[in-house]
Length: 286
Length: 265
Image (cartoon, rainbow over all chains, first blue to last red; front, side):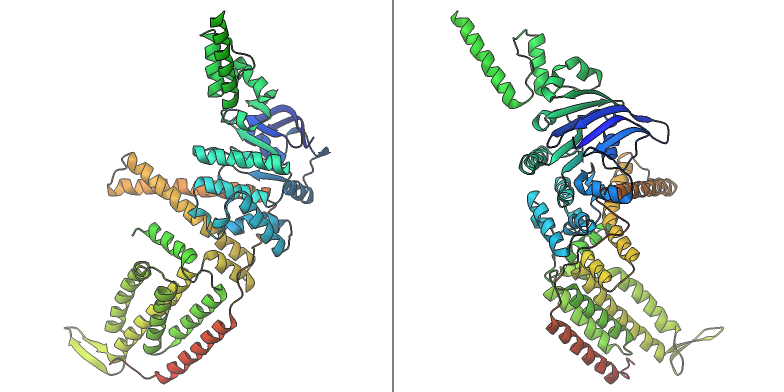
């Protein structure tokens, strides 16, 4: 287990209980989605994983060792766990793209030659090499997000945490980021932890889904299994992916014999529709 | 051109001009030495040479848009003309050139006053052209690396880097806020415009504090330990270029001595 949380609770100084008794564990190489409405505690949870927030009670284990909060341990943690913030403007502070991506590796104490290599590789991976010498304010939001990801990639982390990776992106920007993330997970074995409220994105990306509601972990498991529990999804003020919803309606209102679990992606939906067509053909023959 | 457009244009030029890839050491050495020499000259001859040279370099070699380059001169020059008029009319001593009798005194305009005025005008224009050459051809990133190399205090360089980055962000935010106020029919009366401005500044101030905090968290997450390290990889200056500039500087200094006594009137 790369991360393990035991009865984690966190109370902000104004008294709001942001997380309450959350226990979960993330395995290496997983693609994890934390799903919840605004204010459900996703970001608070993520901030705990890189030691920015300290739990009010409960324990956090990283790589089976309890998280330590001295400067050296935190430095080591942040070397291995990269964090991409929701708003790239929070993250990009340097006058040029290159300088910003170099920030992390330089903090790791690498030589300038190594840093240059790491910067080039990271920018190559996210497809932003040609913008190397440009200042961040020349870039679009999607490009900024990719540079922010490069800044984290350049540190060669084992885990990448992203807060709302696709918020405010256009369809193309969204699919590019998702493709990139899948590629990193499959190619380099990087564990991915994403917080999102974009339910349509989850099935395309995650193989583990955790649902947070009002600071509590209410469900976890495979996306397919969780989205089948339509009652629960509604209770926590989320909705099913559009496609899943369509099949649910077809099943309940039109009494079509849809197989459980309901399809989540276009591929699954296609299969199900073809199966239904086949089924009705056979019935006519009889 | 609105103000923020002008800043953005200057910034764009610093990254995209034809001399952007040249060593910032060469460019800074040239601009600062020419500035020092131009300002210290007693007559207007050397400053005019400096001005012509910087203008040629900016427009001819760096290929800065003439509209942008000349646009930068407009406001400082207006200020300068006003100051020089005052210098010419009210300063100086010795033999007066014109005496204007007034009922209560005599207003004298001096030869030396006019000479100071004309020399000041050209010295300032020459100095401006040096600085504009520098800002239009050298990016902030390069300047920061350079400042680090000459061992400027860390905190000053870090502050400049971050201020530079966030000026553009806050300009954008300010523009959006003004637009939002306008769309909700911000009244144009003097008092209410002051009130709108106060609200704008207030919320902008809170935004800056908030942004600072979030940036610090983001930097911490990437291993920030109290010091921003900068990747220093700009090209070494060509020796021949530095030598050329030094040689030229010597020539200008000689010229200063030769033109010591050239006056206007």
